[in-house]
Length: 206
Image (tube, rainbow, N blue to C red; front, side):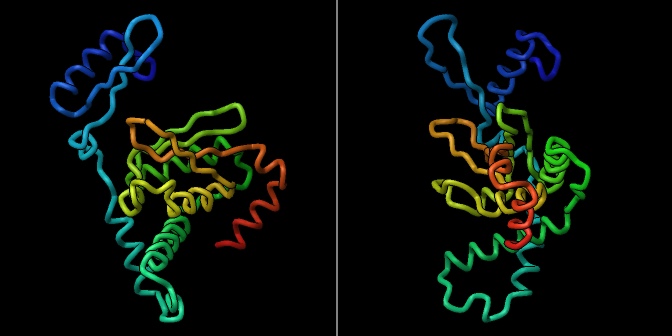
């Protein structure tokens, strides 16, 4: 309601209509007192309405397959080969969508990053926290390539850190009904090592 500048009752009516159409689903949130609260989240049918730019990721993966040499995958098992391809595809996307960080504060970098995530099919948002920022992507194309039980997506982490030129930490929230990729960008993590050293380390890993 706040984001759309509409009344709470109007927001509820919209949500009830979406639930009636099978696009969202509600879940009662337990509270010790007060009025009952409900969490609304997308159903699989609702999730399918958001476009995913699989063509962008597929092109990056195919380019990396074509560039592989036998020595690159010698001795790797199937999971290691898969991981290598995903990380290389992330590097290729980072190079293609790279933006200058010179003279930009971290907030400006993160806003530019979310624009890139939208361009490749994501549905991202960010907010400030006490020690930096939090990024959430509800429509990550990388998420379909990893096991749902996995703790994070290496490709997503690699892409974000390369573009930001700043370390990011994936966080897994147990019990959340809403599936999203959540990352923390901490100011203190750079304060401990120095931004220059961090950028040098990220560049060395490229």
